[in-house]
Length: 245
Image 1 (cartoon, helix red, strand yellow):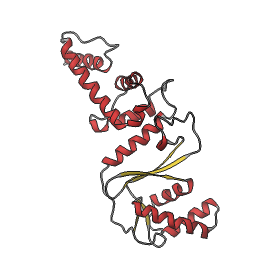
Image 2 (cartoon, helix red, strand yellow):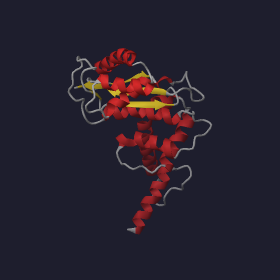
Image 3 (cartoon, rainbow, N blue to C red):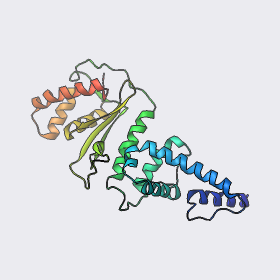
Image 4 (cartoon, one colour):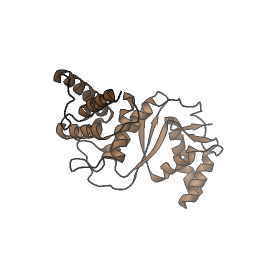
């Protein structure tokens, strides 16, 4: 058993980093190449498909260096291919040391792209709820398929033609899955983001109750907040960001 384990570790070490680790003895190079290509291409394909915007910002050389660093240096907690994107995100957040070729927003952009994938496959459905009712008069709850997010970079706008060099004002977004199971996003301001946070764990408060609490927190006129806040809640309900009960 010790000899078998040693052989397995030698093969795994080589497949993780064939450029630096010598191949295990006794295995035909042609067979090793098959395994090497199969493992790398599958993992790289899942990451490229899961983070298409991030991939577009790298040259082929720099991208493959990054993926190889992930394969060689990250210890995955799951054997499932569907969760490779989550492991790659964890690698960027916990282990990766950014280099000059890495954008300063690499981790935030990767998180934003991962959220879209995670919501698309998340278990559960939207609970039944009226989209036509008056949100000021009924209990308002955040959809379990809506995530309120805050970033330092405008991740929803980043692409080949827009690469902010440094953080700016905080960016608030809600990414959600609607009743047609389509994942969408919506830009928020600080007040609307806080309103959704208040709705997250709400059990008994009506929309009016939440808006009154928001007005008190912001030090704003109650009637003014009820006015624009009611319209905002109605819009959230029509998009299935919140559920009315």
